[in-house]
Length: 162
Image (cartoon, rainbow, N blue to C red):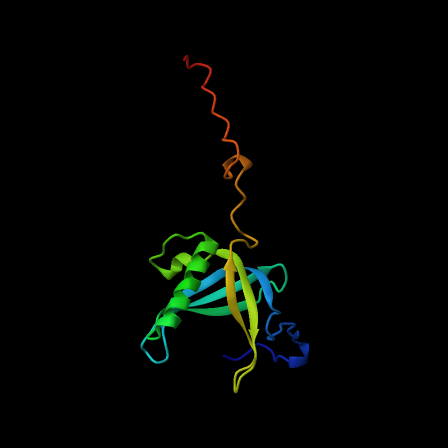
């Protein structure tokens, strides 16, 4: 479709977005998407997860990670399932039946930087998950904490005798 007027590149703003890896460390993140994909060899499956960093720095940066759930290499599958368990515990899920249940979950992710290899540039890898993040569940009141005094008993309404 033809434009109403010409657009000159010099009149357009430049992006301040960096594509360099985020420095290693813990970051609050929200799961934007998660879907099961087949491995390149076609003999396994993994969950491809997209995390959006929400803090404390690098807000808006996107991190991708894969979690093996079926793999002919038993060790790779075991590691992937352990990682999925860490992620589920971090976002507070005891069970999933659909990867959509992961979407919207918030936690902290530990990032590392994998050095450039061959044709691949340096990139981030998710190395850990823990409960937390900018939109984590609110803290329980003190009386709901383990080993804390019980919640005060509710008083009976004044019209109830008893």
